[in-house]
Length: 441
Image (cartoon, rainbow, N blue to C red; front, side, top):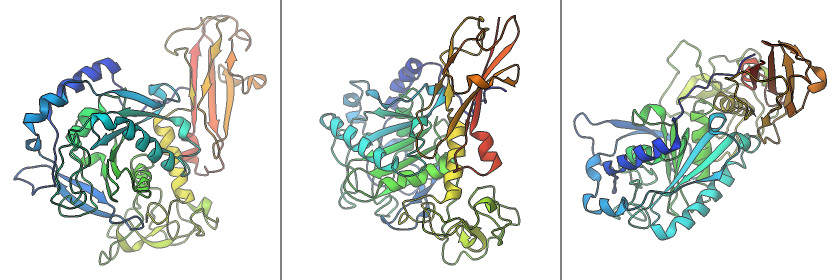
């Protein structure tokens, strides 16, 4: 049993990243609404939310050009290094999903307001399952992105322009509720945090709006897997962030469809957990959940339409958070995929004792379990050379000698398994197990 390899690269030190990012901030930021793409300019495919209960839509807009920088105001912005502070730290960076939250349209005097707004949005998102139960797998970092002006462009009308750190703007590409952001600036600020897997941008506005950027549409050097924007003072905008994490962490597909898109045109089964070509619930990829009463109010089955197509493709439930923001819940298939996604990037089991160096037989080996609740059901077991030591189950500190190890070259392994009832798929269950192994000297 070995510790799972992590599917991402960590910065060598936070200090190195901080210095590099501060220097890069001279690359500038933007303000104003989106403009037509110039020849050869990069475009971005963005998920757009027209209203608090609307089904999302996909749009393509030009990436914000660097020429939008307000060069005359640049020196004032570089006078101080933006503060980075942990809002919530549940474990080591190497064993957690690191969520970076930054504000836009908050002046230096409004950074306290930003922190309060960020905490309120996060609390709302983490009230949604499975975020609620697995909050202990997240670290949350706040980056104080100080803007020259309060508020964001396009609020309340398209002709309003604001000079802000991240260039947040409603009426992006002419769509009033589409809240675009300068993703190059976001990437530069995100590098100030010890690590960044997901980024939320909270815009200082009561106007409803937001957007979701996937990995493919972010700057090539982005250290994170997705960006969600949302307005600070609209009580439903948090669902944009909850939905976008469904894509970036759970790899979930959108379950909505567009009128006129017609039949799904591909013969291959979709790779995503929540879409299938199969019409029969008993043979669908989520057959283990077929017939279950779902948190969304549906019975799990096969409902036609999804992935933007009207026919030939099926989703697990009539509605869910991946279909419409009118639903504040993932269906059970989505929950399972989200939990598996959490474990793809984070570990429920960590230890301050490195596994890269031999351990003496009398050295205590402490382990730490992530503070999970609700749906999670963690079980800790210990092994010597692959054989379980039953009496040590659940022990948070052991010594090799106490486990019966005498002599050199033996291997001690701690394994944690999440036996959550929210996991039925064997692949998801396998992801919910991780181990640490030490060699004894």
